[in-house]
Image (tube, rainbow, N blue to C red):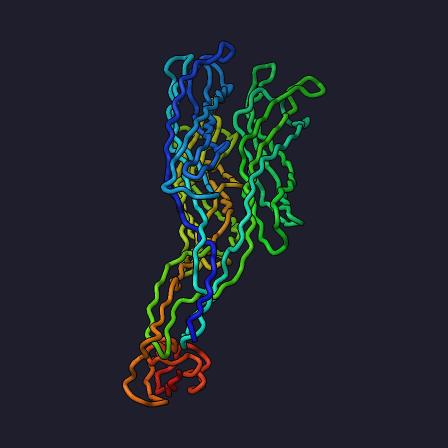
Length: 518
């Protein structure tokens, strides 16, 4: 009988690029005439955002926006002033090799931000941001699925893999007019704002991915009464969203996921019905990166031999991706701040960020280890009524269990502080607790060495050490029956049947009867 080999093409994901780009941020700013002179700088921050990107076969081009915010006080005043500026940069990076339909992940973060007053009317900001760039691409790999004839025995491993992938990108705009209410003073100036996206829900319906969630808007603003008294006030509100994303050919057999990111949040104070600035016009732009994956199963041929003829085989090592699993966990960490000589009289606002995040998959315990720095900024007021910014960075290390095996998996996730609380003790010590939200996807994969080619020499038979139909073999504990069968040029099934074995790995040492098959 001639040798017949059945082959199949399966998709294999490869990492094309995993790199970091740095971008310096430099701003020389002259205050407009209506702003007071700079007396004391309270704080400075730079918030980076990827607002757009395009992909080609050999290059990734993206637009990076840096939102710069400087807080200061004028001479003889306790009213907090805010300078807000935006800078946009266009960057590109070449891919090591061309690829069709690459998957791109861009994660920006602030490296550092410094500010100084060159003169009472001029600010100088110096900082840097970095962008983590990860690009993957799919290619087709031919594998051997089955072999018939020439007395060939096969060793197979069942594998589930991502057979079909669909991707779509869509931006959406949320608009909402929010009234402050009678308990809140009118807005003079918005000092800081942020948007937190609540956990989304996804469902698939007839070629469409339905994404639902909520955008929680938090902002801090200054107020000033006619008598000259002033202060800071917080405000928050929630905007629900629901979006339908067209994704051709997907159905219930696919598993959908949406990565939603905030592109911008524009807050504009406006006059309400009574003429006071007690109305906020909010416009939020979100970018949804949607994926849908359909899995399939295949039997990979990992080894082969003939019971009658010599064989030669070629192998290939493949990293095969399975369907991504959503990751969602709430983790707690804390920090302690000692103000020193200047004890705050009250705290207006607590803002937490995380930096230098390192996420490690622990296969021995099937857990995820997250470490980094918790960066806390407290905007407070001293006993003289002057605004002050208290900052503290504290290392943290937290763990969470994974419902999916993390061995050989890739974690594509973000860590963001959500609920942050503080306690101000009588001695001025401030205890901070932060809830960290881990959200993203765990992409399981496995590396398999499988056959890419097999050649059987049908002209020459194997030479045995004797003419017999049965031989004795002493097996050791944990020895694999396949290895015994290959060494003795017989079949796994014949050994297991002759010795009444139920497991392909020996549980105890002992003598085995090895039937010789042809």
